[in-house]
Image (tube, rainbow, N blue to C red; front, side, top):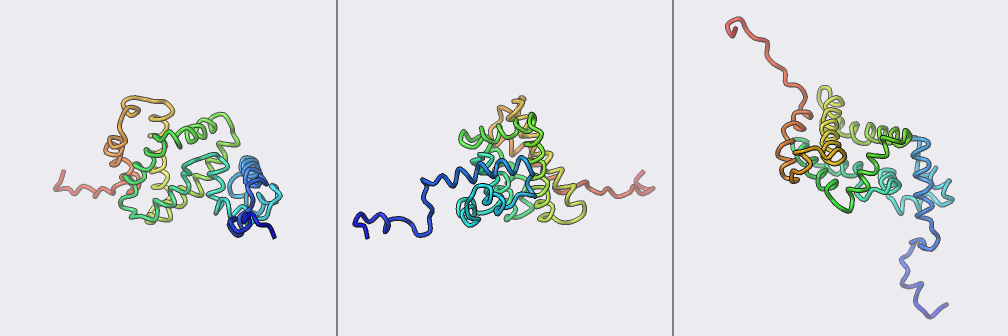
Length: 212
């Protein structure tokens, strides 16, 4: 028994940082995500490649969504953000998503990593395939399940297309006037379009002879 009290101060069950386990997990996860795509990767497979126990991966990252964001060096993980947004009222999803998206991309802490990932998809086919798979499964699919109704997946895709267009024109191409808008202006100007995308096309009643 030692007298320095270090064992007493150590949190029970917490692995030592000196082992480098977290860094090994992240390196293995990034390799597997880029090589195999999102669906094929499991916490167990990452743990095996990193040479650690699966429980340690869960300890550090919680879920595959969390591991993906960390492996891609994202301070703000879009997949987890969407999961949180979908817990709210679907009727307000459009403006809430816009506000959250602009805050994340405007941030000097999270914006650069998000932009780097976006640019990476343009030059790295593996990165593009990975992001596409994540978007289809974790974003578009989850939004479609949440909003329900006719053509839910097409409406979810239309919504994501609107958001993607705003991201590309504001942050990658820096087109005016959207590049210089405040966050509040972006939300105000584009809420109608993203809300319309989620609602889908409005069915028009056929004109009656007396209306012609």
